[in-house]
Length: 173
Image (cartoon, one colour):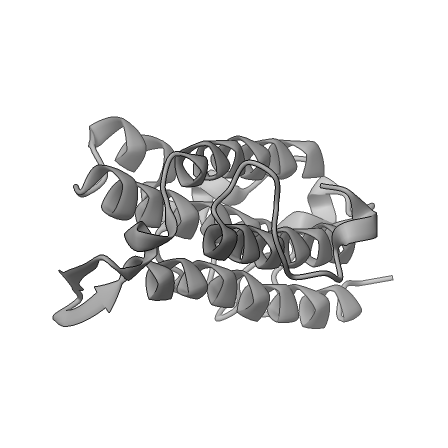
């Protein structure tokens, strides 16, 4: 992701025009998320402000889980399989408190997972055209098009990025 293009929502080489704009937004959201966690230790990533909060690590795990969930739904037309549930299942939802799969890892672990998930997303988006964004399916009892679903992936990341920034300010010195 070239930082010189972070503030330009527009065409991205290898993607149809509207998908390229979506990718531009995804790139910006990811950049700001990674900036928000830059330099954090495993202990800081595991820190819980209280028993109701999520750790920064759990939020990063969840950001990847949301993207995986929407990948399998929009690209492959199915629910997560057993392997995906084993690897990501606890990251699909956030309930607060300790998430055992998102503890004891360093920042590189979370960043690596996010990069692998995003690589699949970009590969799959490159295979589609703008008409695909308008395709509708029932999802959570509502008709949604793929454009909204991937907007929601961005929205989720930005929401949790805000939580990460809030939590980071409250880390013990």
